[in-house]
Every structure is written in C-alpha cells, then in structure tokens.
Image (cartoon, rainbow, N blue to C red; front, side):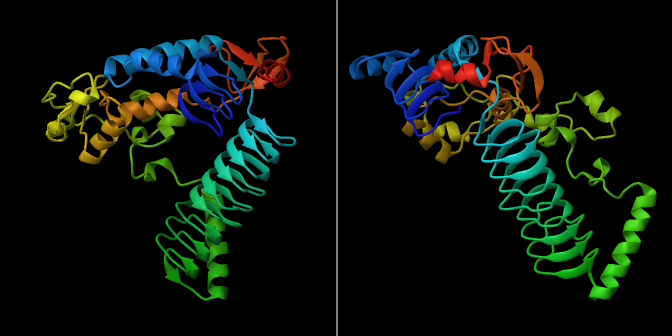
Length: 361
C-alpha cells in the first residue's frame, strides 16, 4: 500500500524507489530489507524461502503477522495530500480548492468527490474521469459537462437524468442513446420543443420534490448489498429494509458442499481443481478456480485462495484508508489534526505532516 517506483515488494507500506523488501514501511531507495532491517541478497532470499509463501498456511501466517506489525509500528501520515492548495480529504494530488474528497487528481473548485480525475467546478461525483466540468451527482461517467444526475454516460453535454448515453447533448431522462440531441425519454424533439418541454418537466419535478435529487433507491436494479454502496456505507439487512432499500438473501444453490481438499502448497494442486466446487472458509459461498487463474497461481507460486471473490474483496476494502474525516491528535506532538484515521482505528502511529516528514526523511 502507498508504494511508488518500486518492484518485488511483499507486505510493504509507504515505500518509494525500493525493491526486494518484505514486512517494511517508510523506506526510500532501499533493497533487501525485512522488518525495516537490511540484509544481504543471499540472506534475504533464504529468509523469504523459509516463509513458504507458496503454501496457504505460510501466506496466511505472513499476512496476519504483517497486519499486526504494520498497525503497531508503521508511521501513517494524517492525510496524503500532495501539491494541493486549500484542499481537504485524503489521497489528493495536484488539486486546488477541493473539499472533503478522496482519491482525486488534477481537480479544482470541487466538493465531495470519490475517485475522480481532472474535474473542474464539480460536486458529488463518483468514478468520474477525463475532465468533467460543472457536473453534479454523476457516477461512472467520462467527460460530462454541464450535466447532472447521470449514470454510466460518457462525453455528454447538458444531459440530465440520463443512463448509458454517449456523445450526446441536451437530453433529459434518456437511456442508451448515442450521438443524439434534443431528446426527452428517448423521443426526438426540435430545439424549441425540447427547451419548452424540459422547462415544464423541471417545474413539475420541483413541485413534487424530485428535482435536484438523484434517481430514487426504489428504482435500483440491484439490491443494496449487491452494490458498492455496501462498501462505502455498510448496513445490515434490517437497517437496509428500514430505509426502503432491497436486500438480496442467500441462494441455497450457491452454498453446496466443497467437493475436494485443497493442497496446502500450490505445487501439489492438480489441474483437475478447475472441475471442483470450492466453498469459502468465511461465508461458505461457492467459487471456482478457472484454468487461466490456476496458471497464474502456479507461475507466481501463490496458493489457491480459500475465500470466495466477495470475501477477498471485502478484506481488501478493510485495508483501504477510510473515506471519512475525523478529528484526532498527532501521535508524536499531540497537535490537533483532521484525518481519515479516526480514533479507534488499529493504526497506532498517526502523525501530522511535519512529524511524518521528520520521521521518514
């Protein structure tokens, strides 16, 4: 995590210009380090081999040890904000006047962005890239300009409440249109007809309270726990249903008994594993290993996963820096700071920028 310009790192955090390092954090331009201590090349590879990371037991032992080591010893910066002016959030680069945003690059005069590139004068965007401008409440879009309340639409201008529309302009309430203009509910109008009817629709939506709001949750095509909303704002079933959202219950057909034992070492895994039904050790949901995947594990000397893809993904999300800000104090100088690492997190060393730079450099 947080590694740049580095190669052949295993279980490392905040490394730059490093190679062949293991269980290390905060290093710059180093090689053959384990637990932040230098070793010779021969010693490094001997210790790496002894860990038996080609086995499930060895990999899980290393993973558990690393998570505990990182939480206790690694120095975490209160916020990773690089070359920014008047901006707040985390993982920001080359931004100006960007407020409460996360994973944002090259943006200006924006608020409440998640995973956005090159935005200008935008608010409430998620997964929106390639120069969105004056865009509001859009998700999974590319280069949307003067548009709002759009989903999975790309290279559009002045489009509202549109889904999967591309290279279009002046469209309202449309789905799946390409290179269209002056359309409402996928019906073609003249410019004058479009502007008159759009104004009438907006006035009605204002009276009904719909205007200015994203698509209502009851129109969602998927249950709440099937979407990334569950990653950002996790809810239990009763909480979800109390809010009027739908919930997908388990399907018994996806929870059959496992049909084989998985060898501990990848070298002992037979090709026939691709024909077997596997069951997640966490949730018991079934999953399979396909032939291309098996070749990858064999090539990289990685053991077969014991968890389904959903549980593996959830585990990765738990490692991600939170996307909420809170007040706390610097672990070194006790200065008041605003950080995504809020109180109660397992990470023990959260430093302000000054203390972080002094400790690392």
